[in-house]
Length: 486
Picture 1 (cartoon, one colour):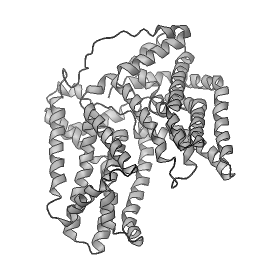
Picture 2: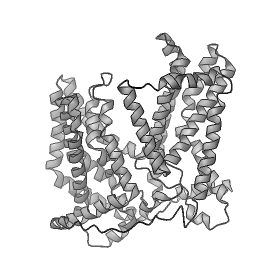
Picture 3: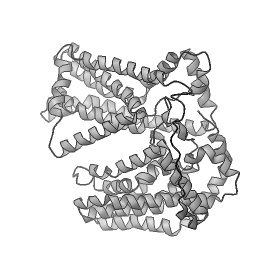
Picture 4: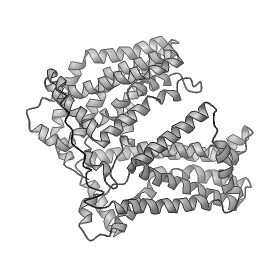
């Protein structure tokens, strides 16, 4: 039966209308995986000797920071690791046992890059420990415990992505711990370090994460098995209908009609609401770079772009996929592409301006920092908004807005493919700002980035014409791709 599922997965991939795009993206992602794999191996081998060279006990030091390592891993998973998706509805009317379907879907996660990449760090590190005379049995127990926690994160990612209340609790807990650590109010490593050291020093402690992993798998299995019904877990949740006229937008004609449609889409669907939540998190991205003397100065503009452009990156990157469920109907109407594109652009611009205003709390770091955020917003409006809309012509992944409550539904508002598509939007402002820093004047760098944004805004009509032309060229291939439901 498992062999049959693998066969169906392969056919779904190769027969997809977007097979060429998916294959190219997977090849690109493969190169990224190779890069990070080599990086992890190098860190695993070199960590022991680097820590010893600075007079730190390697294993104790690693154990001290494991709590942050695993928390960061879980956050990355929540943002980037896609939940395994099967075309479940057709399978439920066939003679497939539900436990087999769920076991296969959960088992797919074991082969995820987000799981085995950790072995490339911990295994070389463990081998070095053994060479340096550490207890072999203790190292084995320590590895078993660490890998158990890795897979605990794997299943926590699935649970947190499907149970909203738990997701909110985790986010609040992570923010509280990070804030307490930053302001030296509470240091969680005081309590976690002895626990992680116990995996090596105390025989039997490693069984705690192993048993937690087993229990978490059984809980996840039971949760999805109980929701694997056409009329329950996979059905849409019915809410009381509400009327939203938004008549004040009628004064903008066709543009207003599209804006009303987008506002209703964001307010009524769980998937789109998650983009708003994630864009709020982007507002705090600057704390990683501003005021951190260990970060290169050129990264300030990087932070400025992300702080003001959260909505642009998490919502704009999926234009026109948000409308994939009725895109075919739209294309049968006498709808001007220019009006459609312009409405999306204005939505991004308004969100960028609102984010910039909210980010005024960065004035705590000084006017220069907030000015960097404003410059980033200008660049986002003038350049990145156009690049996002242009990229939408080639993004042919449909979004099922009704799948938010389904078992194994894809609720990610952000994934690794989307992240790779953002790279061109970041490299140019970094280069422009870097030129100013190279000349020894930050103001010159800010002026160069601002100039690029202003020029993009001035020539937006010409850019819109190019984008409109590309959308028309890709029109029928996009419609064909949106017909793919799996």
